Length: 196
Picture 1 (cartoon, rainbow, N blue to C red):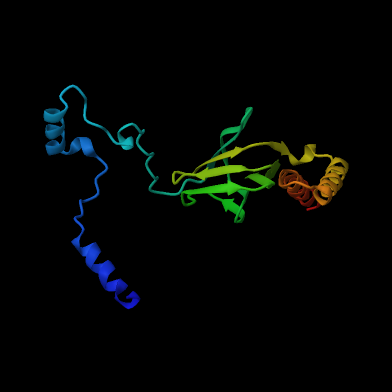
Picture 2: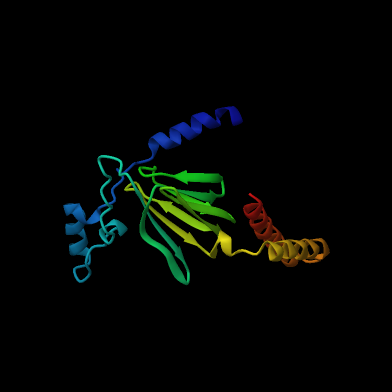
């Protein structure tokens, strides 16, 4: 029976009627006409693309600067700032973003984000978030929490790491273990950010 499965699946796929994919239902005149005959009091449905703003054009040449928007839930750290490069702590590893970078969405893990502007480098510690890199050399970085690296007290980080490690070792429920593990992960990332 199993050796004939491929033949049955291929035959079933060939017999299926296929309609060409269309994202613009309103442009199909026969559909609109049929809709108005059936339901004259209701406008025909529209696809989500009818409500979206047009995508910004991809520049024909690579810009010399990257425009960065760095946002936290309670403030905007960088708004439309033109920089040379940003290095973000993506889940897949450190990711350098330059002007002309391919469009990407990346989840951020706890770590250091560095903003390079000429010879100046500003570093922030991020607890996590997302980065949206657009094809038109704009990077939107959204973090849950962030603090400039030079505002972090190394003694408090060591104390917190010790505290959360003890909580992890003594945790009895899954919730306690998960909370303690998050604390260990964040304080470990803080510690490695400070030690270099």
